[in-house]
Structure formats: structure tokens, C-alpha cells
Image 1 (cartoon, rainbow, N blue to C red):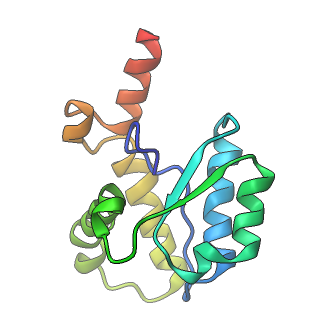
Image 2: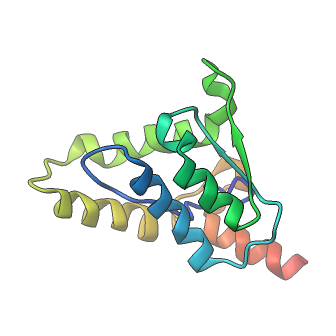
Length: 139
């Protein structure tokens, strides 16, 4: 999640939480955006985020790893809120038969609805995409 606009810039899906999964999700924003050196990449303290492969990938891109304090979900509140909304607005209402079916539904939720249409109070009730367009014009 880009905290500036609340846009989901990288995501991945698999049947287990691995360092490959989170590294795949991290590759996506580097492919999509021009990222300056010194970017902070914040996560929780899961073992996959502390893996050497993940940390090495971040450092190879001149990024700075940042982790929330132990037992403090508020450090990651915007992402926790996103996952809550994803579950309520999509997952609980569906009965996916396969990982590929779930991935298709999640793709549509994130890339079509959440990033382009869903309004956020943090963005003055604009979608992440619209907020980024408006702030780019102002710059």
C-alpha cells in the first residue's frame, strides 16, 4: 500500500505465507512505478518479512526496511484496515472453488474497484487513482 494515496501497489496470492509470496508482491510496485532510493517499506514482524531474501531484495533497490513494534497493530493500521475491507466487501461474500478463482476475484477487487473507484476519507473522499491524478496536476 502506498500510504500517500492508499493505492494497493503490490500484491500476491498463494496458499501459504512464504518469503517468495511477499517478494513477488514487492516486485510489483517496482515494475509499476518510478521508485526513488530511500523509500521506507513497512511491514509487520512476520518471519517472511524478516527473511534474508526479502531484505536483500529491498536493499538491492536502495529501500529501507521498517517493521512495526511487537504487538502494536496501530503501526500498520492502514494495511490492517485494507485487509478488513477486503474480507468484508469480497471474501466473506464469495465461495471460491480454487486459488485461481480467488486470485481473479481479488485482482478485480484491488485493480478495478479499490484502486480506481473506492473512495477514502484519507484522500478527501477520492479514490486512490483520482487522488494521485489530482495531486499530480497540482504539483
